[in-house]
Length: 317
Ligand SMILES: Nc1ncnc2c1ncn2[C@@H]1O[C@H](COP(=O)(O)OP(=O)(O)OP(=O)(O)O)[C@@H](O)[C@H]1O
Image (cartoon, protein in one colour):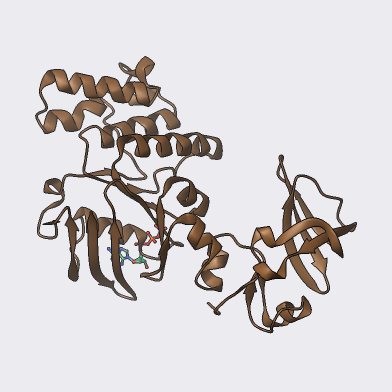
């Protein structure tokens, strides 16, 4: 198990975090820019000394150890590969350093090349690979020495959307197959939902909520967290009242809205996403967002059903 309790202050910024991750768990640190995600990761890696606190892994206190003695794997956004080494040599790099016997080294490299679908590229130099392939080499290199703990800082950050989606599924499968305990920094909630067993939401240097993706999305702690996680139907006290709810802030989760029903709204905005459309529908002076396989043009009436029993009262945040 990983356990940490850390404090670090910079001028104008204070981080204070207490977290635990179980063996084999992928924990996402999710927060907006400047919330302290990278700082927390650097403290765990030993790249930055804490003002106070500790990092413990499997009962061992890592706090006094320099980064290279923490046996922690990294994958940072600027995943610099060694340009003069082949793909296979890049992956083997940490194994040579850790003095793995030659046979075991070769087996581990072959296994990772296979898993990352890089076998045909084994002898190429990184310069001859696409961005997504380079990213897979970087991931293989980080995983090769079987680090007990893997730290990933925006591992998909620098890639275009299509490559991101492809690698996301790759990363998800790999993390689960390797069973490695991992901390993943991201500002993208969908990435966190897909990759992590649990999320820790950071806001201005504090962990505001921790839980499984479904839990946190289904019961965000406050309006800020709900909005940050991508919820759109956040009702003010006035809007709540207009729909027949008590006059306080509420969250209407997506499953509380269905197309077809008693209420008639008017489509104000329509977004085409391919497999679905997103609609902003005005109902009794309240704008509600709904996604459906199809929907009428802007200005058209749109019947919908609301299940107000699913509305979640929220603290202001
Ligand atoms: N070495 C440093 N010296 C002084 N201030 C720092 C230092 N590193 C980070 N900060 C400040 O600490 C705060 C948190 O930064 P951090 O990089 O951890 O945020 P983040 O959540 O990772 O943001 P992003 O998503 O933009 O990378 C910021 O206000 C930043 O300016």
